Image 1 (cartoon, helix red, strand yellow):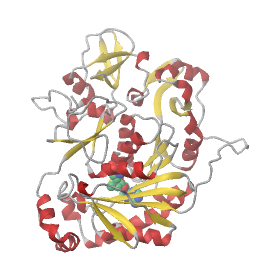
Image 2 (spheres, protein in one colour):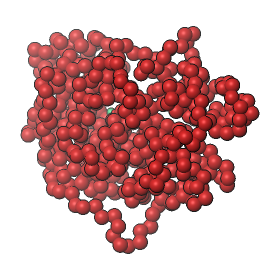
Image 3 (cartoon, helix red, strand yellow):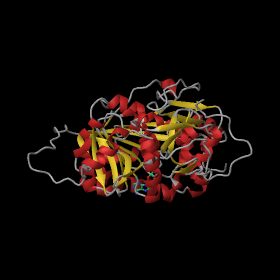
Image 4 (cartoon, protein in one colour):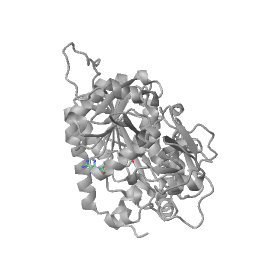
Length: 464
Ligand SMILES: C[S@@+](CC[C@H](N)C(=O)[O-])C[C@H]1O[C@@H](n2cnc3c(N)ncnc32)[C@H](O)[C@@H]1O
């Protein structure tokens, strides 16, 4: 790999005697890692663990993830290991048992958002945002597959978040960057890199930070990360923020043997991940606390509030409320023919987000109801709160599961006229409707597996 000269000079300065080890590590294949969705998959996982997270594992090689039904079921997410350090930050800086409002500002495709969704309590709200619409759709798909039901996916420009003044306890900004840490994984990134682009990225990151700072509560935590190593996009931006706003750097504790490098600039501490020192890709992270103390939230001010979210009709709700576990703890909401739910205690906060931002996906999408006709939605099948007892289900073998996920017609050898939940390894994949002895495949067209099937299919899932 031919590296840009100015990049090499800077890395030599940053790494000193470790530079040659760094250079060698760029020639090696990147490690493959996954993060397991513990709410869906509780079995023991046989792989070596990523040291800074309870649910991350290294695989010995890269399997065909696309052909693994459990990936589509949301049982795990493929994520590079350094990014999983987010878990340590949250565990060390926040009481995760409290009901929190969390923002993931640059969310797609959903690595950090799905991780955040696993870490926060069920009474917490995650707003997962992605400004680019096509990428926001993929984010919504991954959030639905993860299935926690307490996430709103928005597609807004960072400046729109000023409308949610002092709303978030935690803000994660995994900023668009010059991608130096991706050189090994994506050699094309080398060709796209330039000093001018580093400067442009650093300015854009400052703009993003300035635009969203208002949305953080006093006392709230900002977790800033990039997948690049130059100081302009990292420490210098954090020092700039500390100078502009009333923010202090938070220092994290961890064992030096992990190989994570601490950096310091003008009182701001940063954490650097290099591929020769950790089993993961290039990454930078810093944590800041906004000065002050949060005031007690007071949503019920006495005035009759006008909500944007409309309660589901009684008749419509009666048709579907047994499809989720503990329906009594949920707010049942209707938008046209679609019924969806949010945890009851999150209704007011979620409504505020609906009023101020462009929400493309929220909570658990349960069903479409037209008169007495009810159609269960894909997101319900993948919800962690699905009441499986309410449906007939059919277990598929691996080949049939893959064919179902390709939206092919499959023969189940069954008979009937009802909805059936199709599963692989007892894990729901989606719906089919029986019509006599054939079935209609209701897997969403946009989500289907598009790749041609190899002559030999995998024998089992990565997790088996
Ligand atoms: C590093 S990626 C995020 C990865 C994601 N956090 C994850 O863990 O899967 C940065 C994201 O920022 C988005 N982005 C690009 N320009 C942006 C801008 N001006 N403001 C906010 N986000 C932007 C990109 O579309 C991209 O999805």
